[in-house]
Image (cartoon, rainbow, N blue to C red; front, side, top):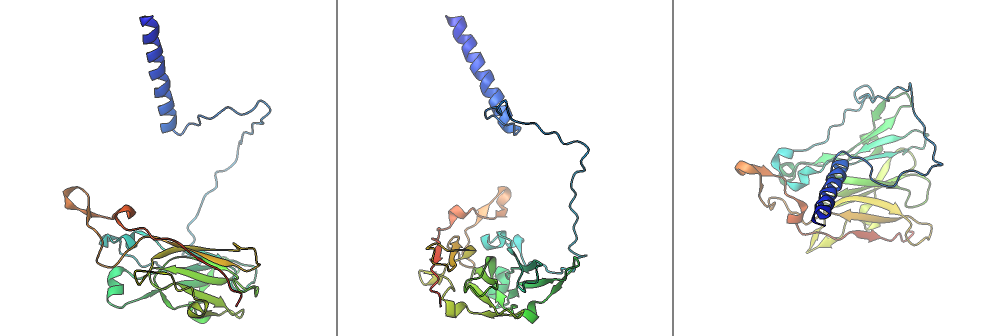
Length: 254
């Protein structure tokens, strides 16, 4: 009996070790495929290669950041929006941007950039021409035709006031944030830090509504000091900040 128990314990440890090793190596441990499943083996196919064509495409945008400062807001990069803003059948690119914390404290700003697709693999910066070069403190954004006029509009989720740009249908945009009432919800009298957004028709009335994702309660120069070994400062985990609720905006149709 004792020998049988020892064998069972050894077998149990062996199975646990195999399972742990399988998980560590990324081996699937689920049920096997059914007998009728077909096996397809790829032979003689070249592995797809990705090439950096940023310079060749004429994109000169550079996102402003200062990760050495170790502010949590500096730990997050900006977003990228792909949209056919002029409806010529080719996707254009909008890059969000934000100033560093030190820049913001000095009253300095940063702005995003809109690049028009030239249909030949290159892009042209049309930010000023499109009237969308306003300063922003953006983390992300969303594209949607909120007024059903057939032209994609742009919403930016910002640390400071959010921004909504209406597509005028002639290659330009107008800032309608105040009119639309989507500058951002307040908590304790201060605008909440927004990091992302999405358009969807939650009440099925044919109009796109707006869902804004807010992150955590943050203020300049009030980050806790989170350290690594040797007293080296590191980015703090979000758990050291108070969480924020998200915001849902219903489209009023006007």
